[in-house]
Image (cartoon, rainbow, N blue to C red; front, side, top):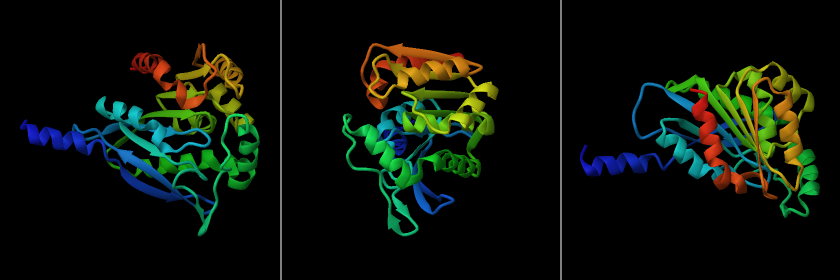
Length: 245
């Protein structure tokens, strides 16, 4: 392959296609769909859901890594975050004060204003959107979430039947839906947290692992939360995903 064509294909993989959906209650939600540079008839797909106070960009490096391994990726901005802030023509955002010592109150305030209980439904709509992409193989779906996003993807396991789920510093959510999904889904699931997580994610990770039919747990020595753990846990995630194939 001529060098110039190879470079063109490589650069193409760095720029994802922005797509949108409208939530049931009127949020315009934004996502970024990217395919590997190597053309194939169908691609496995990874849906990535970020943590509170962040946006889709926390996943860029990981998404590129998945693309290089042959996966398509969809990074989304959750409602009230990033570009997903317009609801029926009005801006509706999470609390701007996301400092760690204020984050608990910021989450509670944002939960009511933005409607965090609807995030799982939003993500289900994203999966429906992906099912309309002829290149996507929905039978090879991987769900990845951090904190708020992790809590929201767990209830999707029964509905979507992914081949794997990774929950980084898992947050709470619809406790009944989470418990039901963990009890009945046979999806291999990896729960990761720091042993001294400031928001108690390690306790949820332990509980979720025990309740899951096929749960695995990684606890590392850290007081970090969410995406800050990624450089230290990437090898665990890679090993877990290799084990499911």
